[in-house]
Length: 272
DNA sequence: GGGATTGTTTAAAT
DNA sequence: GATTTAAACAATCC
Image 1 (cartoon, helix red, strand yellow):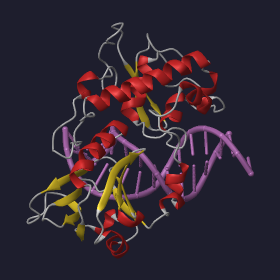
Image 2: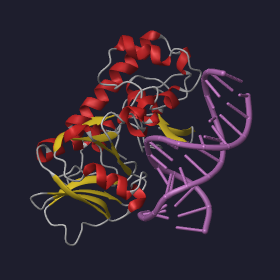
Image 3: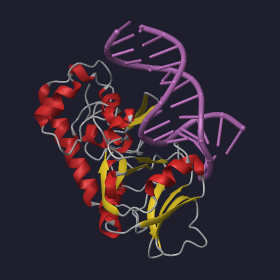
Image 4: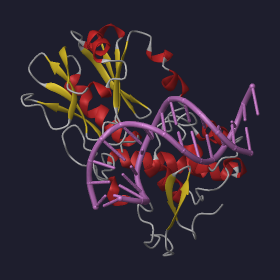
C-alpha cells in the first residue's frame, strides 16, 4: 500500500543505483501491467540510460535520456527491486528492465493492480491523471494548504484522499494526520476553521516526514528495493487499531466508512 | 466463502 | 454544469 513515504523511499534508494545505467531490453512477463501495450513500452525504453529516479504523488518516475519518462504506480502490492540474476525471474515479476551489466530493475506485483507506462518526451504532462494531481503535501506552506479545503462540502478525510486536491496521501497517513490534529474524519472540510486546517497541515507534514525517516510503513507487502520492511507501522496511533484504547486518552478507538474507506479515529480526541 | 484490502476510472446522483 | 458519491475493477488473503 505504498503512499508518499513509501514511494519516496523507493525512489531515493533506486536513484543512486540506476542513474547512469543503460536499459538493454524490457522483458515483459505479464503485459497486463502495461496499459499502453508491450511494444510501445519496449520501443520507448530500450537502449536508453537512466538519468534520474524521483517521485510525484504515488508515482515512481524513472527519467531516461532523451526525455523519456517511465511512470510506475505500485497500487496495493507492487514492488521495485534490483535483481542480479534474472534466470529464473524473481517471483511475481511482471516487467524487468534488463541493464547492460546483467542486473535488472524488477517490477513485481502480486495482485497486478499496478502499472508501468512510458512517455515520449513532453508527453507525461498530457496524461490526464498526471495533470490532475494536486500539490505535494511536503512542498506547500500552510497558507497554500488551507484554501484547498475551503470550498468543498465533503468529509475532510475524503478530500485528503483525493489526489486532485492533494497528492500522495493514502488511508494510513490521512487517518494518522487527522488523529494528530484532533479532527474527526467525517468533519465537513469547509466548516473547519483556518486554525484547525493549519494544525492539519502541520500534522500531515509531521507524519509524512516521520514515516519517511522510518523508511515507510509495511502492512504486508511493501518493501524497500533492498527488500527490507519499513518501520513506521510501529508508530501508528489509530490506523488498523479500531477497538484498542486511544494512545492519548484511553477511549476505545472507533472506525467508520468514508467513501468506502475504513477510517479509524478516537471519539474523545477527534472533534467534528 | 464473504468481506476486506488499495487507488483510480467511470457512471450515477444530487 | 458542477460537485459529490457509488460502483466497478484489478487479485488475493484470511
